Image (cartoon, rainbow, N blue to C red; front, side, top):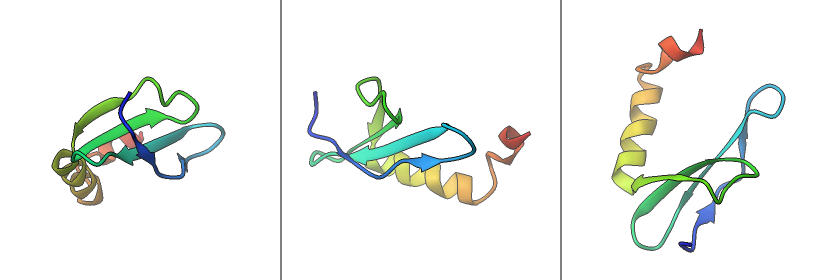
Length: 64
């Protein structure tokens, strides 16, 4: 397993918590809090773009 530096969980209502992490090799990770061994991974740039897109409202349709 990679040496991942996990951020504190980002939580919504109830137990809907996600964690975002990075490693020293320029990779990023997203996992459900408590299940960090089952993560999605991509480049740190991909994570930056995902965050930009979310901030720009491109995922608002997922909010219901």
